[in-house]
Image (cartoon, rainbow, N blue to C red; front, side, top):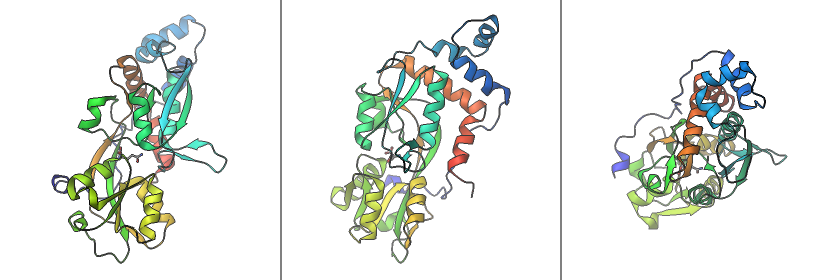
Length: 284
Ligand code: GLN
């Protein structure tokens, strides 16, 4: 059970974001991103923000003028739908900010998580942003941006459960979301017969509520939201796995990857990334 060993990092969602940078740069960047004319002032801005301006308007995308993001909008607070059917969440807003920097319009394509990975992998979307964990296996079939957040695989159990740690999952039935690292780790550690794969995290949690599974293994941030909405459940203090989230693109699409990384770097430096995270994840 290799996954179970080095994982006692605690339950806090920690984001590896540098909180620095000046307030003036965000105005300059959005100007640069939307620039049409090449005045001398804009040219000097361009020189100062080489990455962005090189990328702007020059990146080839699946749909011209658009940055198409595949996702699974059932993963709060990273991606979800509002009552009126709009998309919102950390990934949606970060993707919007990246698109703006690249002079593109964000298009969100909602589908199952495994399909969202495949869409980016096969070039049907430009990128997948879905709280995607970087793994060695996935790196064989797609390229990843720099990490923009850290994730934790958490274990949800009923409040009166006798499961107190990951080791106690042995011999139990575990609910997961299909295609996720939670599913992969649990089948590796406990065997396929012990793991049920559901379409999304909420369905897995409902199965836990109904007593169809003994525990659910899922990313900590959605776990907190699902537990808050379902009385009688709790998240174990000990984490199951520690992970990095990144944006996935088709293997070899270095032009887009460099543009995304350039934009991410600027969004991190000017505090945009942190402020988006703070909007959706309240400090504990
Ligand atoms: N972080 C997990 C993974 O990449 C789950 C992501 C998700 O369910 N959206 O497998």
